[in-house]
Length: 386
Image 1 (cartoon, rainbow, N blue to C red):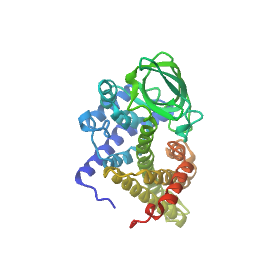
Image 2: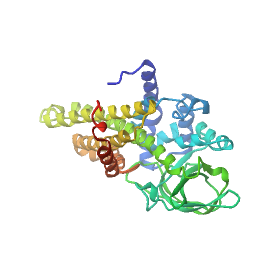
Image 3: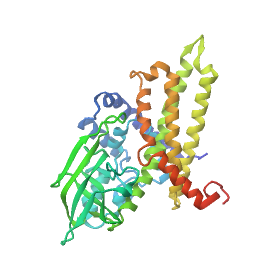
Image 4: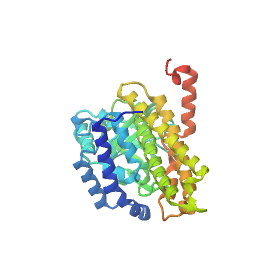
């Protein structure tokens, strides 16, 4: 088990207190209205920045928190204790591909994103390209003067309403994908509907349409043809942080509620926690949460050492997402009828958990990745001594 340093304990407690005092009081309103007001969003952002918690994944030299991957995952686990949109507004979505910014790009896109002056979203998914990120049809056509013309569409783009610019993957050749920074408001760039979801209330998921959108040469992020690599690098971090670590946090929060309810709720003259089948649900949840946490931290430590953690991240994505589904299902069962009732947040957690097995690569896709890797690498993937 990881032994936390005093600094890590202080970091966790700071984030935990912020979520308890600043985020949790807003959850019910977001759930009931489906939105977060501009005033509340700004207040969250300002409070998080004052604590030095905004853009914690970005290097100190750019104004970010400069946290190690392990320390960031410890924070991300705490993020799982509250609602997605509140985390986005408080701590920011500053995606790692922005570190490819050079020259004028740094002042225009990178630094404002790190400072929270401009909000960014990543736009990869299309109606015909979900887990198959290489199947995109959006294209950017090069012009004689070095500029580009963007054509196509994206959907399920999280945080689209709030974002000032987008990291858009587009085909720049028959077998070539590049990434572009596309500002909201450009001619021919329009936002479609907010695609309502069964969970994640308050977080918009919108359509983007590009009709001959003019992009200056400066809009190309990194090198031409580097877009798929940048997208996969960003998604690997998202899978570890926003799926793996947050699933551990959300499951831990649910288990804490389950445990308290099992101790307090009485049936047949005794606490339901005295019944062995309820105890089994609690015990299985403890085991699975701790296993998932260790997997997350192992993959994070690999990244901090500069090692290739892609296989481990795929394993984390599958295990943590499915673990969360099992834990919240047990939560509903332990709470019984009240677990199905909107008076308590358990049913909300149940709805929110379902997407974890789908977005950023389905469980089926990642199982295929893991299987192909073990067939290629053999015991090195599962034997500590190989």
